[in-house]
Structure formats: structure tokens, C-alpha cells
Image (tube, rainbow, N blue to C red):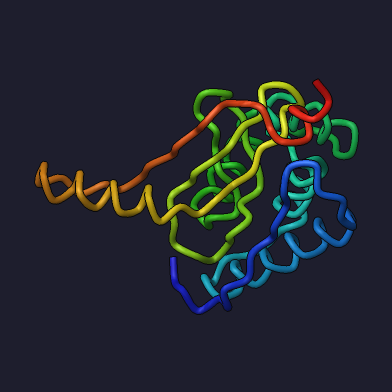
Length: 167
């Protein structure tokens, strides 16, 4: 993916109050721009799937997306949803959380990066983060093992500050 996209990110902290409609609007705007830069079409279906993914700041499973889409569109098949998710992943617009088998919007679209996630086991909120410590560790692993990392997802489970305060 090219790095011609200005370094914008969509930041959401655990328990942070923000204008969610503005958040979704920004994600869609950035997605359209990434697709334009890459020479890809940001179709209505791709927009709808991405909008559903950003509807909450929680991971969503493919079949839940299928159910949501089926209420809005006729004739949506599982293969259509999976192809759309593959496209959105390839463009760096969504991440797959492997341990949850679910998807969430990328808060750093258009930027080459590995996914690092903090996942609250209580409220199920997920925060994507960029960590220099993980980058440095990955670099050392590559050097020490003569290995080129192509994809890495780090998923850390715990309890967010908001949920700790509730206890």
C-alpha cells in the first residue's frame, strides 16, 4: 500500500466520549481516499460493510455483518461478505482479530503497520495502538532468525480503565 495518504488516524480510547457519527464519517472519508489513491472503487457495498464495522467500536463477525446487510440489501451471500472483507483488509481499512474471528475498522488507514490491539474482556471494547516496543522486538526477531515478518497481529486481553473503575 502506498504511503501517499496524509498521516491521519481515527483515535478512540477506552470509555472516551466522542461524536460517533463524525468518527464513522471520517473512517468512510479516509477509506474513499485510500481507494482513490490505490486506483480501486469504493462501491456502495464496500461502504455499507465498512460503515457496519465502524457502527460500534467492538469487533464484528462476518455472519453478523451478513445479517445486518441482509436487512438492508437483497441477495447478499456469505461469499459476497467475505470478498468484501478481503478487499477491505487488502486496502488496510479493517483488521481481522484472529482470536475472536471478527473484524474491526483500522484506525490508521493508508499507513503501513502491524495490528496491535488491547481488548477489554469486560466491555469488549478494542483499541488499536501503535507500539514502538513491538516494532523494535519484531525487528530483533527478524534479525536474529533471518526471517521476514509479513504480517503480525498482537492481541492483548485484559480490563480497560473504565471497567476497572466500575469494580
